[in-house]
Length: 462
Figure 1 (tube, rainbow, N blue to C red):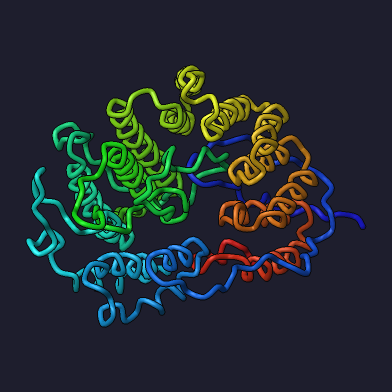
Figure 2: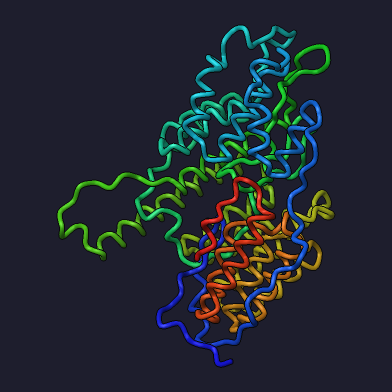
């Protein structure tokens, strides 16, 4: 069947955090038939709810936020006093994941003052709080999710100061400016850097979300710092991870926020002026993010993952020589014996090289680097995304589509992410516009069976 060509250029592809213009889509290519979904889709399990936090954690890790919300809806009537706040944290997180931000904020207000004396206990080292860290983090996040970014940044800065010995108010960088109406969604095609996550887990921390509530990789403690007999202060390692998470959350909020449009004359609202303002505000946001990351680097030392994130921002700003130098520092740090067996660090080094090759329009070389990551870790969704986009720009759209489809079918839990599906739908549209609607409809039916409750199915264009 002769393939039809789209009368208009397709929408630019974009992936998670790091925008990087990788060139112009290929003019012509061959694509396979629309994706035929397998009979068994690997849908989410529907196991019974276990007792205690283990059962709640299981539902959260499975993305069953609606079941979690319904199970905890009446937690005030049956929760043990020792577990009341932990159950409240799970319940408010479930509401937040389901985008019920107003209800979540109301539930937080009903809890009263989290710093009240009734929530503290004296210890030899001083007063310690029974409030789970996750609850404080949600309290700081919710205003930003409701559009009040400055309020969230203030609350997150206060939370940062609670990490004693790791952050002081006068050391924090200035609050970044608000976003322009263009927002992050208007960014061009981008390859993804590594998802934001700590290097190691903590026994008291649970593998749940942070930042923009999509990564499923930052640890948030859902229990108070309580041993079976008494409260204990968080360890320095725990405080360090929390500090990193808070700073990255601030960056995420700033880069996703939208400022209200100012009243301007008709001449000022011309497309050229709006585009210039968008570019200026976007650059200011990324520079503010760079300031926060550099400050965090001073606190944490030469961490290769943190250095890699700084390099991503430098690439977004178009500072290729600076990014190359930063990535070289990250590679040198990763060569230390402590990181020799760290898969995440070694993958970041190859990802950095792939991004540099992409910036220099060596798409075939970039695809090789990203595929090398997949060979060691087939569940790396970021590498799968980047490899497919690199193939597309190397005029191999068939290979790009096939690779993404195989990754999704082989491991839905690892690869089912909105940006990846956005890219796949755009590739369908680019290769065969007449058959794209059917392909996207099949993809949507499959994703609906496998996706967690908080997955945004609107990313599949119909």
